[in-house]
Amino acid sequence: MPAAEPAADNRLERRKMRTRAALIRAAQTFVAAGKLNVPVLEITQAADIGMGSFYNHFRSKDELFQAAVNEVLDDLGTILDKLTAEGEDPAETFARSFRLVGRVFRRRPEIFRVLLNTGLTLISADRGLAPRALRDISVAADAGRFTVDDPALAMSIAGGALMGLGQLLHDQPERNDAETADHATRDLLIMFGLPSDEAAEICRRPLPDLDELSEPDSAE
Image 1 (tube, rainbow, N blue to C red):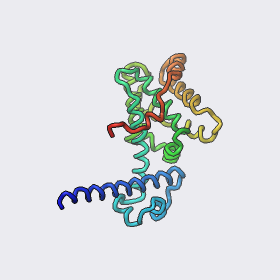
Image 2: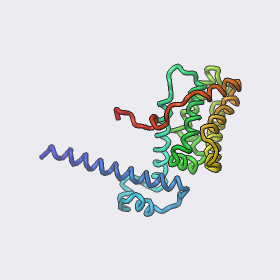
Image 3: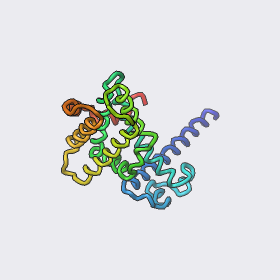
Image 4: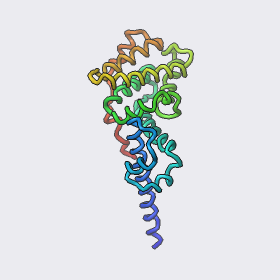
């Protein structure tokens, strides 16, 4: 009889995790659509759970929406962490990350819409894109690859450029996303002090496959 208790606890924990995941997925749908003023009841209906279950997981709608955005940021952060190679030219590390995220806008539209509707607050987020971009810019500046005196300002400029790139790709669906992302990256590298020919060459280098990067690690 005692052996059955852990199994029951595990089932309960899995059910809680499924409920939380359903709420986060529903919230991401609303954030992606720009519907931030929906009532909690509408969210629970979209998640197909009871109203009372909501408050077993979140104290407020704002807390849920923040968790939904954080999950997107963490997923992107995991992808970017897979790109980091020890001892690599930090200018290339930054460029590869920016080029890849620029491609996410079209190839992962659900992520893109969440990012776009979250707006420039992403620049000051303590997870996801911003801290990694700040790290890469700081390392490149310390190594003499970027001539920037204020890495935080440079990161803010890069963040604004990224959101502008996403909006442009959204407004002009016929535009080639890869070429546009690479051109934007090249211009940022030049702004940060790289010679134009070197910046262009870096942005011509092959990128890893986004689908493979998005797959969970086999150990998980």
